[in-house]
Image (tube, rainbow, N blue to C red; front, side, top):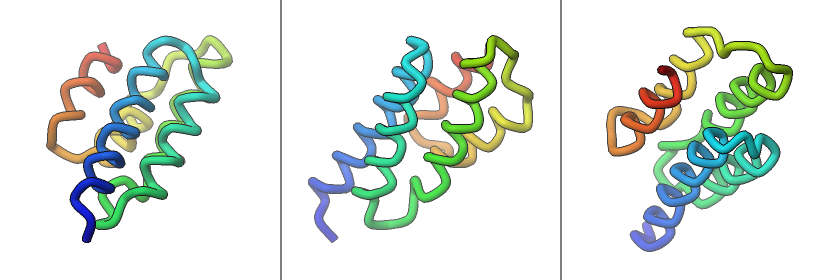
Length: 90
């Protein structure tokens, strides 16, 4: 495993969440996909679908249902990105 590549995956995952927060939905989904591509341990395999689901609701001006935020939270795990998801949920 390449530790640098995994750190880049974490950075891309964080970028996807911050882009989602900035209403840059397509960029958020692309960054989530990049995170999944770089990920070597399967930590972000479900992130593209989860961010895509949240982005779909936000793009249409609808609130994101709690179960979709739960998917996003599950996709990033209990690590440092959980705080960003909690902020987005609020």
